Image 1 (tube, rainbow, N blue to C red):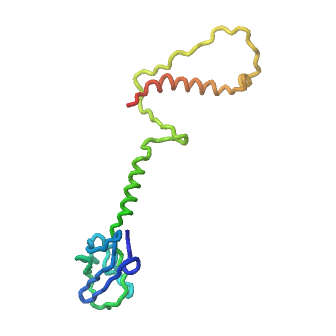
Image 2 (cartoon, rainbow, N blue to C red; image 1 turned 180 degrees about the vertical axis):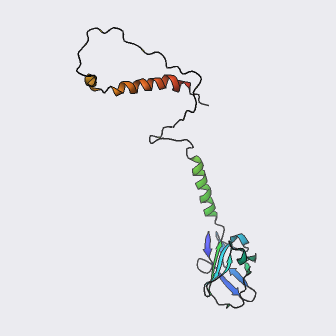
Image 3 (cartoon, rainbow, N blue to C red; image 1 turned 30 degrees about the vertical axis):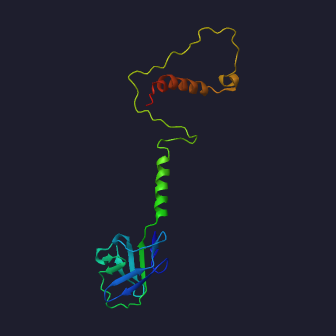
Length: 183
């Protein structure tokens, strides 16, 4: 969790001669912070003079840390010990860490496959075997007592396209679907 020292919690004292910022009163999960790592310091700016003193992304604005005392490389001799500083640090937050782990667990529990809007698994077939058996289709040889129909679309109220759709569905079912192997 990122905090601004003096605003979110804790306080600091600035020593322009020693180029140090001493932090105090900072807690993490109810425990007083006694040490700070350099990686936890994000940014230090003298807001009175509008000058950056420390920035982790700028090698020229570096520093060191010992305990809760930050020593900046910037020459602060022209500043005042009472100048207002913006000190942003990252402190460990167990709740944030737990939430991050829960987010990972939820992400891992999500389906890895592709599903459609009805939650049906999608399967992509890349290749077929050497032969494709479509089975045998029944043929009509003799029609007895034919009933005259004005047009095929009026037969039982169905469009002729359904005959093609059914034929394609049956061919898929008998030729491709039966050849799928699940492991």
